[in-house]
Image (cartoon, rainbow, N blue to C red; front, side, top):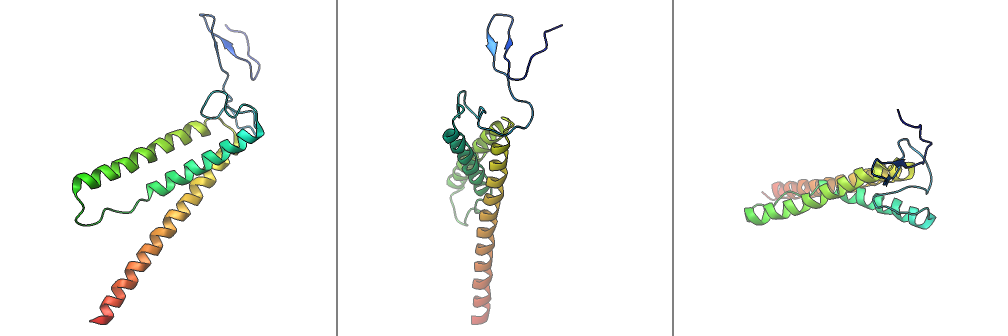
Length: 145
């Protein structure tokens, strides 16, 4: 049917154009394409920047997924728009992360997992601190009675 392709080789299309070959198994190294064609462009500095970008994106997505609830008395339109805006950014970050991890680069994968884990820790620690603060306030209000 077709000629077997060597790894890293582009496949010719019927109209004469070439398509890029995508890595289909996990690999380690700076020779990756993450999100944009030519990035990180086989540069160690840009590869480290890509790893940091993915880490921060994952951390932000996790923190945004644990947003505080709307306070009583908030205008429904304003509250809905605020939550919709946060949701827009969270989903955008998650889709970008999915595309970055699809590069099958181990460094990018590890950065995404660690970013999500740290973001979850930060968000849950903050939620526990708020809950403990509310418990202390309700306990002190009960003691005053």
